[in-house]
Image 1 (tube, rainbow, N blue to C red):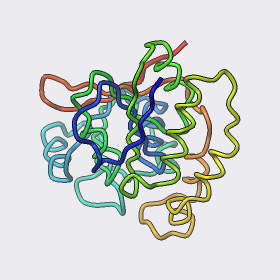
Image 2 (tube, rainbow, N blue to C red; image 1 turned 90 degrees about the vertical axis):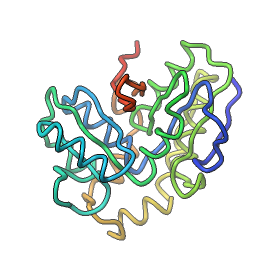
Image 3 (spheres, rainbow, N blue to C red; image 1 turned 135 degrees about the vertical axis):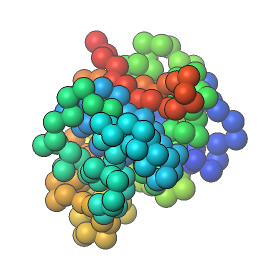
Length: 226
């Protein structure tokens, strides 16, 4: 498998297969939302779009980065989300990096959203589909976020190698700028357990597949992987 690791700004055209990585915290949060019963996640291109979708569908749950804000139900924190019952609900998600990266490759034939919590399942999907070329979108810090790059490289290794030691990849992620900012309270809307939850390897057995719906919305759903 040929793997490319690109930042959002480096994407020239939609790749055939894209794995969009946001460890801290968009796609860790998305995985937790599914674990808490969410049926689907709609990715919004802006805060205004998220609020418009919420206004049209009051029963949906709207999430955003940063501190709480009017119109939004929750913030982008796995630690806060893990105690919420989302059974059968649709979640509207808008973040500064992860959702932007996924929308940038929405025309790809296969879009997978990933973090360490679904790394193994994501690798199994790529292996099962015998993908020859995969573009890993490193969403944070203009493509330089160490936690996202480490996760992307780990998943790529898992596709082609039977045994991969995750220790060094997790160490890099845990020592990243994003991890420090979350731990030190630089970012708003943070739970003390967020960093630890983002570094839980293979917490969930499903992958997360994004599909462009007829409404032109990119919708993520969990995909069970044997």
